[in-house]
Length: 82
Image 1: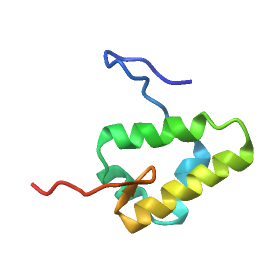
Image 2 (image 1 turned 30 degrees about the horizontal axis):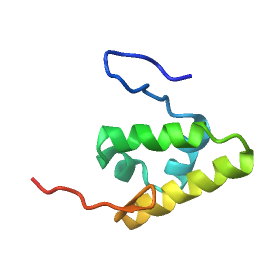
Image 3 (image 1 turned 45 degrees about the vertical axis):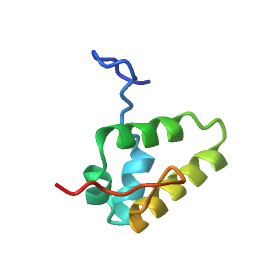
Image 4 (image 1 turned 90 degrees about the vertical axis):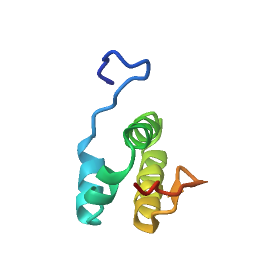
């Protein structure tokens, strides 16, 4: 279940399988570097999957996108440099 705060969007908690996938692929730092809305969107998208196969596919897509560093949920993403 998402936790609610003052923001309009629910804030999703990271499930163990997502954390394990990030750790196994050494991508936790890449995940943490993404903007909060992207991290939250990934989790919500994964958690809303109705089938295990869909959930696994979404986790794999997130891992691939974080590894490449140029996509966010299938869309081109370019990190803003300070």
